[in-house]
Length: 268
Image (spheres, rainbow, N blue to C red):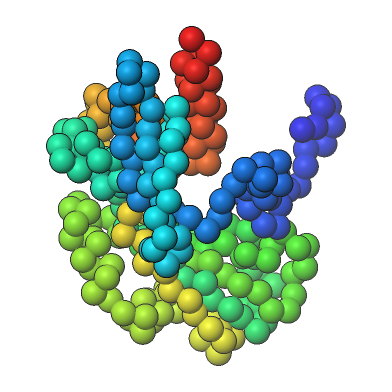
């Protein structure tokens, strides 16, 4: 961070985005990290007055189950996943889980052989570009942080489905195939960049049915968020959804809160 009176930085991120932070944390802890296993069941257990959590994991093929015994578990995933992974929640899910609603997003990565043509009066491509009167959120230039404003690039385009009913939005998201979403993307972008179709060499479409928590009216200050943030026996919950807003800063804050929570409980 710059000191007072010093010119601010032109960039406040890295070319790889938050991946830089993930890699930094991984390098510090990789001797204790297992990348080839997924937790599929959490079983809270009372063992002679002391609580623990039995964790069942499988490999990347969904086979070779292996168990761990943990004093504490941090569940850093959305609430809708908890009802499938936490055994007591599967049998009797708490009411607050249903209050967490998630928006559906289509995200497309466009690989371009060159930058779109621009007239002298056009504003240069920014990292984040929003289209006027578009249903999308525009796009980011994924290569912007490399400091090169010419040649091949990748545009990442974001299209949220803001239906009142999130289930209907997910259905609409999944019913449209690659061709339809590609056409929606290019049709929207060519309003700003008429040559976008001829420049695009490849389009990768991702459909996220549960992309981000929806900060709808009544949820932000309701009880569901507070209930979701409470530990369930020896399982502690950490996710940006617990703040009601899907931001990295919120995820960071929730992670710190839960790590302090676990440390305090473990020291007593």
